[in-house]
Length: 74
Image (cartoon, rainbow, N blue to C red):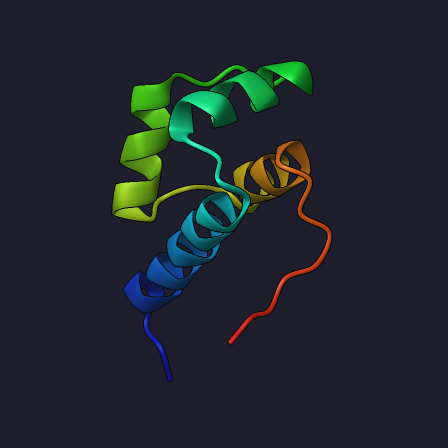
């Protein structure tokens, strides 16, 4: 069974993969989040994704902002 750190890494990798797939930079993500009423700084996003420490709400906000409709979770 995966430990907490492994789950955090999986969540971060899932979001990073979606950003890469859609060709969206962290800077562009900031703009897209602003468009749905979420204020984040690029440095904060970078830190969250490098540490893998963020809420499910943040993950859903990002996925919504970038237009992800389907995910493959492995």
